[in-house]
Image 1 (cartoon, helix red, strand yellow):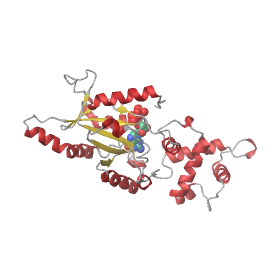
Image 2: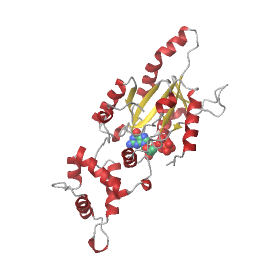
Image 3: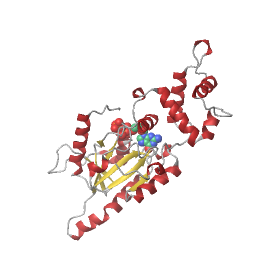
Image 4: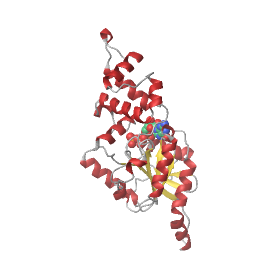
Amino acid sequence: MTIQWFPGHMAKARREVTEKLKLVDIIFELVDARIPYSSRNPMIDEIIQHKPRLVLLNKADMADKYITKEWIAFFAKKGVKAIAINSQAGEGMKEIANAAQEILKEKFDRMRAKGVKPRAIRAMIVGIPNAGKSTLINRLAKKNIAKTGNTPGVTKSQQWIKVGKEMELLDTPGILWPKFEDQEVGMKLAITGAIKDTLLNLQDLTVYALDFLEREYPERLMERYKFTDIPDDVVLKFDHIGKLRGCLMGGGMVDYDKVAELVIRETRSEKFGPLSFERPKDFQTENEE
Ligand SMILES: Nc1nc2c(ncn2[C@@H]2O[C@H](COP(=O)(O)OP(=O)(O)OP(=O)(O)O)[C@@H](O)[C@H]2O)c(=O)[nH]1
């Protein structure tokens, strides 16, 4: 699903998340491990305020695991716990519950000390479109998909999903918008499939992808497209790939749109192996938005 975000939609999305905040102890902020900065909502800190949060670096199977470790350390420095997960395969699910318990330990200890009966941790998932929210909810729900019913005294329509004995999850995630105003962020969102291709010029996106691969993973680029030398000229790059892979039109001319589709598809579908499109060092000096 791709949402076109207009100011009215953003305000509504924000309102919905803000309302649900009251119902939960902790927010699971779901981001794409390949672009942990670009796949965050720009106003997330302001929206969730001081509510405890756990950052989930989802799709970690598609990201460079060393860079994912750097991101975990980056968040830790800011006092935010982050863990790498793969919702599709169900990896890291136990760690989510453990981390949530750890983060909320003091609060729950205090409740117990006051004589409040222990209850399950209540959590909600928040993330931009395509971050993997539904996949994660289904994974966590497993056979406990049976709803636990409305919580008395709060919004009638909210349903809770039991996750083990220790946790309850709101069945509808909070969907927030990405930081698409920034051109580079837009490219990263498009190359990871978070926004529709049609919003961008495919050949521009391909130039971006080839530049990125050449800079960060040159051997993989050379190997896949059999470059002995990667030419500087972008037209030569397209020509080489087009001829190699038969992206041609009548008369044997290279079809640049076909080359673009091929490169984008292959970058997205892990043909180059796991890729991380951004590193924490690029954001070290920046204030958290
Ligand atoms: N490789 C991989 N793919 C994943 C993972 N999690 C989700 N996906 C895929 O990412 C795509 C988007 O997942 P969804 O669960 O639909 O994402 P969503 O956040 O609910 O999306 P919206 O409904 O648009 O808000 C799907 O094709 C999933 O199969 C993961 O950990 N690894």
